[in-house]
Image 1: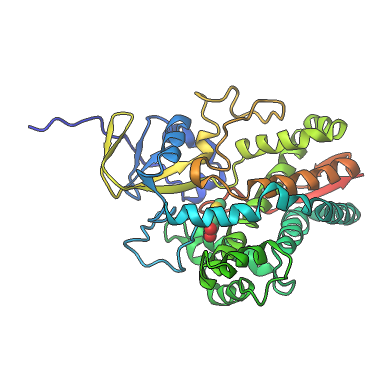
Image 2: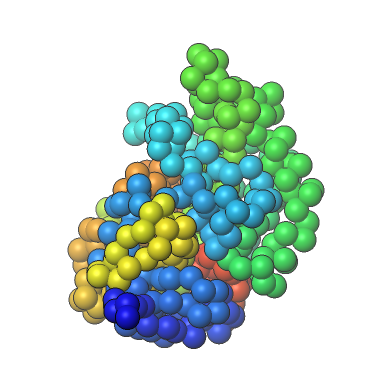
Length: 397
Ligand code: OVP
C-alpha cells in the first residue's frame, strides 16, 4: 500500500468570491493554515505564508510564468490576447525582453520625468482641493497616472479612458470565468483596438518610453511586433496598479491622520510610507505560477503542470513574518514585502511607480492639512486587484 505523504489541507475559501474580495484579510488565516492548501472550488493549490510565497517566487525554473499567471493555463487554453513577452514568459526570452524594458525604466531614464510629474501633481492637487467633496478615484487616483505615466510612455490623449478598461480586462481575466471576468470583457473589442493602435511606433510620441522600446527593433534585437507587445506591457501594468495604490494610500492616511501629520512634517517619509501601503493593501493581491516538474513544498508533493495561487496579500500580513501585521505603521521596517513581487519577475516598473507616488503625495503634503473621508469607500469587486471604485473625499488646505 502506498503511503500518503503530507497532503495539502482542503479549504472552501474562494479568493474570487465577492465575500472574500470585500474583506480578504478575514480569510487569510485559512490560506496560511499550512504551507500549501488546496482550494476545492478551483482544484488549485495555494500558498499564503510569506516563506512559501518567497520560495515560489525565487524558484522561477520550477514555478513558471509561461503558462500564464492567472487561473487559466495558457498552454492548454487559448488566451484572449497574445501572451505578454514579460509577465507570461520564462527565460531565456523573458531575460532578453526584460533587459529592453529595464533600460527604458532605468534611474537615468526616469530622472528627467520628475519635474514634469511635479508640475502635474501640483496642478491636480490644487484642482482637487477646489472641488470640495469629490470622488478621488476618477479625479485623482486614476487621473494622475493617466496624465503622468501615459504622457511618459507617449500615448495619445484621445481615448485614454481605455487604459483603465484594459487594465480591468488584463487583471480580471487572471481569475475564473465569473461575473467580474465577463464584465471586464464586455467592451473588449473597442478597447483592444485602441490599445493596439496606441502601441504602434507611428502613434507614440518620439521622445517617450514607448519610443525607447522601438530603438531595440531598430537595432534588430527584437522585431517590430515584439516592440509593440513590450509597449503593451506598459499599458497593461502601469495604470490600474498605480491607481489602486494611490487610492489605498489616500484611505490609509484618511484613517490614520496622525501618520499623515508625520508625512506633512517630514515629506521625505513619503517613500517609506508607500512601501507600508504596498504591504498593508497590496494592489496586486493574487497571481499564479505553474509547476514545470514534480516538486515538494515544505514536504508536500506537488505534481508537474499544477497551478499554484500565490496570495501576496496574505504573505504581506503573515504574522510569522510581520509584527502587528494588521496595523498600518509608516515607521515600520517594510524591507522584503512582496507587494512588487520578487525575483526575476519582480515589478520592472517599481521605480516609476515609486516616483509617481512620491511626487503626488509630496504635493498633497505641501497643500493638504487633512484628508477627510466623506463616506464609506466603495470597493471594486475585482478578481485580482485590491480596488476601490468610489472614494468620496475632501482635501483640507
Ligand atoms: C503587474 C503585469 C500585469 C499585467 C500585464 C502585464 C504585466 C503585461 O506585461 O502585459 S505586471
